[in-house]
Length: 139
Image (cartoon, rainbow, N blue to C red; front, side):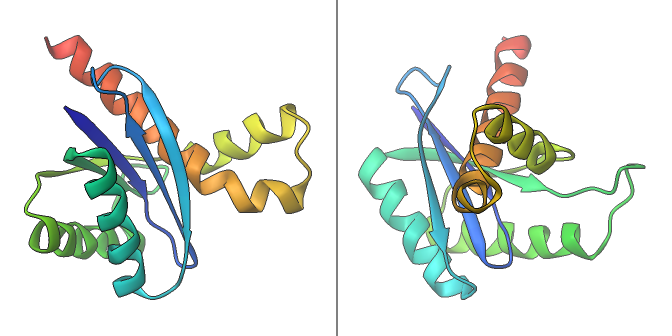
């Protein structure tokens, strides 16, 4: 079973796929597009290539836990994902993942320009790790 986490953004969408055991984050990728149909196509390629069976979509809540326009956009995209791929989609609180991703890349010596190209993939990996840890705690 492979699980894919998605950090859906306006211009870049990060994806991270678990290993076969569903315990660790493995492959990461960024889809560089503003067009939802291109993002869905790119995600579909990853789903097919890795045999993904479950999706986790970053759910951008406000820091106080309330929902804003970004969360509404994620809810609509979750419906598009379910319709396009017929896979279960879980919304996952993604507060601070992009901030943490920037910090991880900065501490690894990546300059701002290089961070911009990969930050969404790292954010998706953080979403995936959080979800996988949650699943392990439930079992």
